[in-house]
Image (tube, rainbow over all chains, first blue to last red; front, side, top):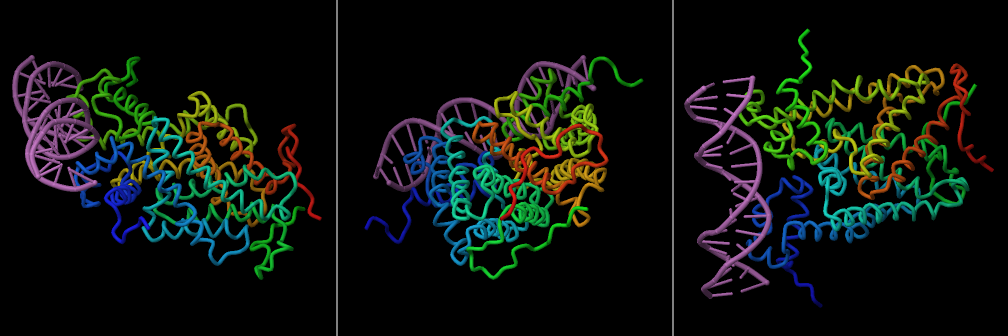
Length: 217
Length: 217
DNA sequence: GTCTATATACGGATAGAC
DNA sequence: GTCTATCCGTATATAGAC
């Protein structure tokens, strides 16, 4: 066993930076704050990370590695239906948004828009996070493949989910109104309702649609 | 007439800041850079704006005032159909994204996510920009009201347009791939295609749908 | 690996003449 | 309204002992 009960200095630094970058952003977080939050000293940090950006890269890697165990797994524990898993994931973001009174959104999205001309390594690390997230949704859609139209753009649809989440978070945060996020998700629900078959395979006892589409004259 | 040919020092400052904040972000833009770009001096800037944040507020106000003349009017000049105007607006963002090789997105969205704990005045100025943008889409949808289902959430649908634009810009910038934005817009097209009647009123000679929805078995 | 002390630069903002 | 010169805090990063 390598893991101790006490996290290593390096892990404390990455953890502190992860939290602070999410709360305040990258530029607005000073090294001194990270050191204070991690209860470490300047010498330790620069022993592990040659520069602040290397700390950011470690944080982005931690996020990517955490997508499965920290995000998807808890969100999907009690949700077997692949389409519902998509909305369970969105509900997770809603929860974080709500708990922070519309302050905490998606840390990757915030960093992606804060860093305008990022170093290639940083840009790729951000892109890798989005790709992993979208891949997870693609997985859900693939599992529900037989309930989808044959000509559907699976990747495009998965990206739409990310897009709606990120846009909904942005709007809700700016308006300080979680209803914005809810409306975005509700619209996505409508989109799925028009697209997905009423789950002949799934034994889920939900109604196949929430709001029946109005008939055309 | 008040306007001269030469823009005032104040206008040059706001214009320079507007461009720099969009290109590099708020925190990453130094006062010195603004002064250089505006060909002005520190004394002039602080004569007009007590602090950097007041310059930001002026920039956000300029954006809001420019939504009509600088954004909607040129985008809608040759597009009478209200639904097509929505996509013409999105095409405008695509153009900016493309011209900058997926670097320049939506400056308001970037600022909204960069500034995590903004001063109330700043947050409200950002929110006012989003509101004005969404209101414009609501206007389009209202004009097309008779082509929409009676129970549609007009504001929710308008916010979805903003949400898809912002999310699409975020993903395209991060992946440095405009196809991400295109896929997001294509999905929105699908959503509208399933929602909007084939324009009985509009004399536009377009086909009512691009990709016919697959029939359910 | 960790500590303290510090180098060095640059940030926003100010002073006061003109 | 505009100019130059400058204050002063804070930022990242380094040096070198332990």
